[in-house]
Length: 531
Image (cartoon, rainbow, N blue to C red; front, side, top):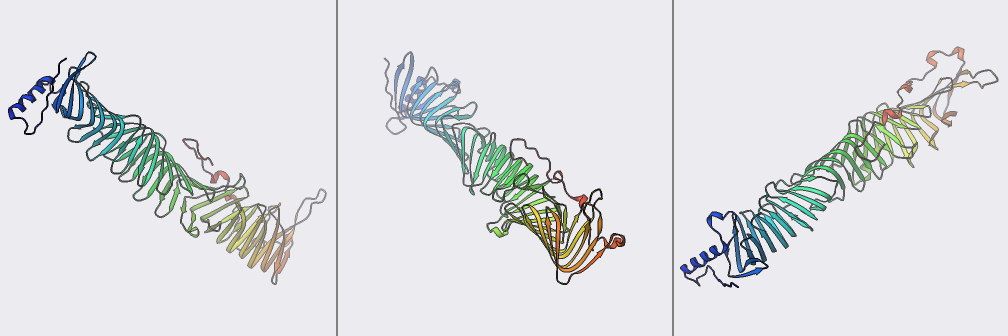
């Protein structure tokens, strides 16, 4: 068996001539010539060299401060088996690969095929690309021609912003693009992400979502995205079809544009915003959320549902809906602007604008509001509605209050006053109390007898300070008048046109919204909450 022990160093132990002789012998032994330097691995340095065999394969065992070179790749290790004929290396102990001046790979074991330039590193592998990122794994294959590193059986990529872990991963050094597969987890000071597949550019710091990805920010808000990208440097994103969820709210939409620096989040297409505590769901085609201000704006055919059972759900539509959130419950608001319409089975309404205050469960209607309930039309300069147990408890009408109802003969019974308070029981209006400047017109009807139809007997017109109207099954049952009432009964034949209405009378029954006027068509691209 051929045996040779060559020990060499660049120290002062040998003469310059001996150094040259040893280096020439190593070069000759390695079969490395200038003509084939691009293909063959060259043994540049070792403290000791021994020859041996593995079956029919002859190899050289090199020990101590070993250095191999192939083109721009340099391999360091404590010891190695060098299969010169196969152009193959098995390296052991403190393995280090330098690829040009930008890539360093370390590990405990290496198998390197110089013909295809494929390096397989095992155990405590650290792959570093200068000024870009570092990859940690126990199983790494590095394909030099493709300039791609890929790992399996768990790995971790770390850069200045993110830590990404997964079962499998691929890293292209040319494009700086990393692809992660299976149990992907991303950790950042501002959020964590989990997914089954994710891509990341370590130079641009952009994340690309390829499968449903769950993001939890530092405020414990949860976002789910199906597609899109997120710039981790500028904290801006362009995302597709996802949802976001916090303790109090849930957001869904087809397209997301998120700016985490300015804390401005924009959703487009089939937007759903849910307030869990208030049982309110807002629908629309566009939404802007300003997190620092706690303001959410929904527009483009928006409407909301104050959820109850089928008959108790209150729907409200407007040109724009705005939600104002605050740590102070007294400052929480829901606003509706321009062309407000409301619909519920037993209540419909119109207004120019509306405000819902969550702290006292009260809805305020502004600028010529009109409400209809059980055939009664109510108007005033402003109307305040108190919600209790998810249904109407009381209505407060202020300034120029007016109630109109039609009887079976289409006569208009009317009550006006400065202020009115309407009370509801069992989801029906039970009474209305008028305070100040009370006036009423009430048509007296004859009872039906045999074949004689119901007719109008005359009109009661009463003026007094305060009036109490009691209702039965949503219809006026009786009236009580307080503080010096002035009453006048007018028979039908004496009834003049001016006697038929009170000042400010305006019947708007033709404008009463239907459900389809308020609840807009809405279609999701994936299963979700439906109105």
